[in-house]
Image (cartoon, rainbow over the protein chains, first blue to last red):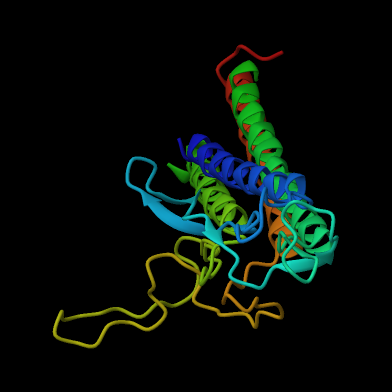
Length: 136
Length: 127
């Protein structure tokens, strides 16, 4: 039944967006993680990617999380001479996480998640309507 | 066959199958809304059987008939939103299609139920 396949496809979308939210949460949680000592790099922001995959069993294109890559942009620096990780100039390397970007990414993931949920609700109503035919 | 109501039920059944296939395609579009280079698809609306004039391919050596693309909608509407990653899924557009598909399916299913009711009346088990 194609409707059950629709449910499985939408569920793959939910799973993908949930994985994306997990990575965003990881980035946000580590936004202020400073290194333990000088010369050590702090947390580097993670970027998630999606890839379409043809599921032969479902005969449909589902989505799954691809490799989680690291953001290659420069680290931020903070002037804190008393910090154990401060260099000779008193600068401490901080993670290259921008809370604003992460919040926007989070909103986007939330919208996509809701859209997939909507597809599931709609498909469930269609299945219910099909079952109702039996009562006619 | 068409006069005893079974033709109508057959047509409704085909219509419902078409809506199910379309729902699967729309689910694919929504779930791949963030996949790079993904282009959304839609199904071509079923044409009424026997309606209009159709071209006939009389020899396999002839060129294929235009517009035959495996049931996909050959029209390529202009996408007004394509992300830098070449993904052109528009979530609002897809949600509209999902809602429309659901209501059309419910209409076909209701008509099917009514046809079954009529059949029951005809065979003497009417309510």
